[in-house]
Length: 581
View (tube, rainbow, N blue to C red):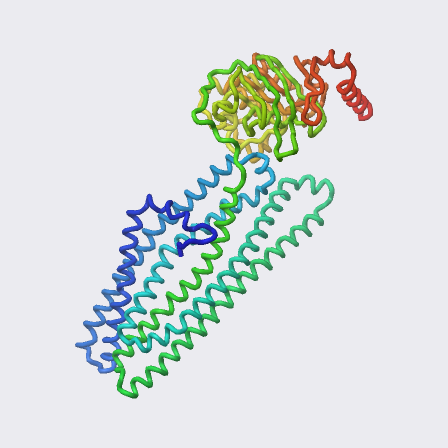
């Protein structure tokens, strides 16, 4: 089963090497289990003829031996199954861990194109299916294949003429199994794709349920869901039908082989060429072939399904990853916060520049606002500052050090992001602020005070130990945003990136968040993406961007006096405010 395949099961073999000792003991138990089958064949050939004689003195010792051998076989089977289960599960765990680590390094642009439901399915169900295939390969398929070889070899020794008659059917059976297996794999891939689509729709439906209700779109969503589950049902049914068809087809061939042996045996006995004890031993071996053939057939189908799952897991590895750290990385030290973009050019797709000839200098402690229409490249500037991407041409310097020569981890410990819509993991408020970092309780509370969050936190029933529900739904938007600001300032970053951090809030919540931002921004370099120009009038510099280039730079007053595009944008927003008011 663990043979070279398009899906790359052979590549999982190195993951088994750390468990070689356990695999060796499991393999020894497997050999005892298979060998006991041959001993039982021999004993049954002696026992059954003696039963007809009624001589207990001859029967009881043989029965005793059968029971002993049977007990040894079952003990060996337990050792085989239990010893081999551990390595199989460890491989699954290692595979899932490696892919999750890989997922964390995938470029954000590529990651945003993936369905969260599909990714969840791949790292749970697909990974479990791969684990099951490995486990069944180790504890079932390999022993079954060994049993087939051992029993057939013994049957050749007993009567090669009868065995050759059986072996003539073997290529046909193998061909049928391979044909069914290939079709099962195709059907499984379709089924898994439908499950992934269903998982993606469920994720969208649950998150967007308030919107669905607001538009009274429940019937539309129900029809979409009904269509998806119907397609999923049909895809699964096709897989089950193929597997169901395979069993009777292979079973008919097994019966034909058994009938052929009986006819040939009758002819041989009639001619005196075969005796009854030899026939019983041989027929016992024939019966012992039925179970391993059924197991190999069923496991081959599961192996093909596992190929599909492994291929889907390996697709994650094909996604582009964020730039690797240079070797050796330049020590970053404590940043002052001077930033410099020099002739920077960048594109996500070759030939389609997002930033071009981008030149900007920011001095430590300054507040700089990036304004302009959607698609101007503002978010891309943040992406470069966080080293999610590297510039194609030019230089991006922090305190005179080229960002492409420092490690991303060192950089991100000194650059903090406050996104437009904050997200938190389930856990306590303290956990959300720490976000995996070590700090004292005093440092934790100090960051919350800077973010204007401490007062509302201590008023909660459990204070900092209050548990946040999924997506922080048990606190208000303004409170969640202040938690995000506290999270950002905990590491005392030299640079803060604010992505319109108050745009989704009402006036009262915005005032509380603005106070937190003002305290958090003190003595730091701050870059702000602003769509509402009224929020950045006090910035030290306002950078107007369009189509990846800087159109104008200056203070609010200077830009307004110069007129031009910035004044036009301000007037449009002012007119819109009057209209909505």
